[in-house]
Image 1 (cartoon, rainbow, N blue to C red):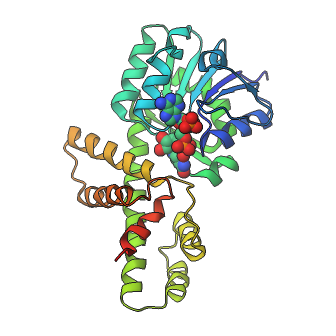
Image 2 (cartoon, rainbow, N blue to C red):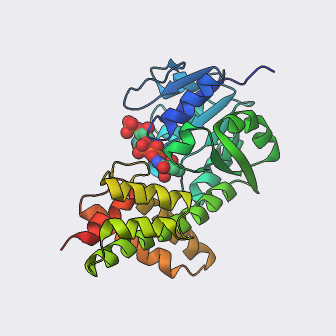
Image 3 (tube, helix red, strand yellow):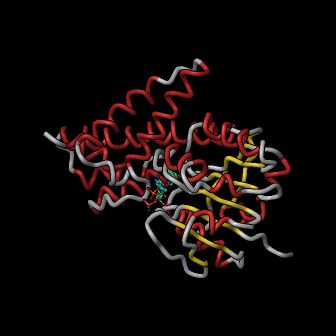
Length: 285
Ligand SMILES: NC(=O)c1ccc[n+]([C@@H]2O[C@H](COP(=O)([O-])OP(=O)(O)OC[C@H]3O[C@@H](n4cnc5c(N)ncnc54)[C@H](OP(=O)(O)O)[C@@H]3O)[C@@H](O)[C@H]2O)c1
């Protein structure tokens, strides 16, 4: 089988290992990042439009709505260069509204778009075990599936444009509340005079210790809060959750409280650290 050619934009914490996996798996990959970056086995393009020209699949792995809008529809944006037959997969976490609007604007050019955000962090991006949460037409998804299969362990199709973005927000609503709960449990225990190391060990042996909680317990234990999932992106996702919940009348009290806590942690200077650095904000006197 001839593998589709890929034009990849966005080489941050997630995009770089994902693009590297595709190159390693034999996909012809051209990459572009605003801040120049290389990926083993991939051709580095001088502009986003050069990376995506003629590619079977165009992928974005960008931070937020503003970045996706700018890269696609801003000055020199790639949307204007896309042609029928090419499929766009947007894999960052963006608002369902923007995912729908991207699909609608590209449909006018005869180009199909899939919103395909991912569950999993840098480790899962690196070992290709992401879960891909997709929204778009069945045809677009079929086109992108060989690439998704090389990036993750499972792709779930939730329906039309925007539904992948909504599924991702549901996942990150839970993540945001769980990370806040873990940080509060540790801060509370420390304030009560419990031995911190003993508490972390005990939490790791409870049924609450999911893989992500176990990874964050290890980060707290070592004091290494370098970002795998930047705290500023958690806050961004909970803002998206809040907006999407207001649109459909969903009640999300815990997520709203957690969102306030992450926003405070950003004010305290922890936005570029990992999501679990919210603990550092709770610990301050
Ligand atoms: N990290 C995780 O664990 C994780 C897990 C699941 C989903 N996600 C989601 O996946 C997306 C990427 O996450 P990440 O952790 O890889 O983020 P990141 O490390 O902050 O990388 C963000 C990327 O977006 C680019 N970018 C930002 N603004 C831009 C603009 N205006 N124009 C062009 N490029 C722009 C950055 O380019 P520069 O390098 O030039 O800044 C970089 O390539 C986010 O939506 C995040 O919420 C992250």
